[in-house]
Image (cartoon, rainbow, N blue to C red; front, top):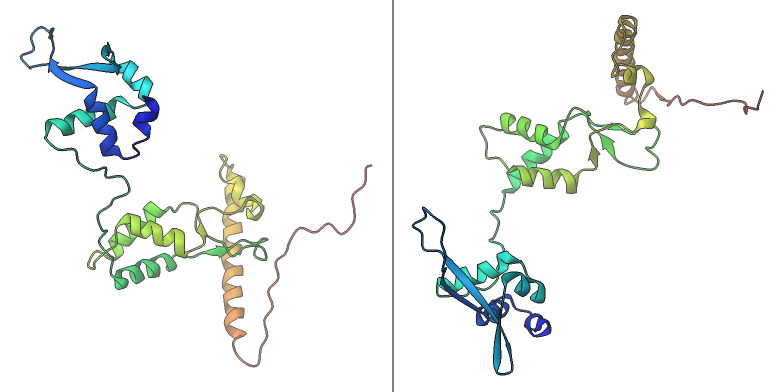
Length: 238
């Protein structure tokens, strides 16, 4: 019976197979205080000239089907028609205009992204602020383009995933010890040191931008170096 059921392959034929073995009838007993007509099902297996009544669990275990599939077949049969299965069939999605797609790209590009400090030779991935997420970016997108036609969240997320190589956290090897220390209940002295650290970072970034702009002129060359931790001498056991 198991092989016969699964040999059909088509969901509609499998529902017909189940209906051949199930009879619907009024329940002999019903709950006290309920006026509803309770419908139950009698299930029969056939062997040559005899038929044996079995329970629903026996049918489910024999055919390896779920209760929902059995009740779904009965429900469709009560409506007078067995509809074809809908798996793999989807209505055509509304096409998003190219101008709307470009707005999404422009909005994602508006967020400042930085390279991985020590990994830029190995990857092109860039990193956004850790406080951001696609959902938060989409809310900002809705605010920024509230006067325009907007893409739905799933389209925004698809463009972010498929057209951009971005992440929302900084690699551990790139994290600054001073910045990281602020996450664990910093002391007053650590807070003052952190404020000075941020001020120096902003000044260094401004100087770097100025030098990059100056280097665009034909009379000046600007070089930038990544200062990594370098051990000049090997360490031995003392």
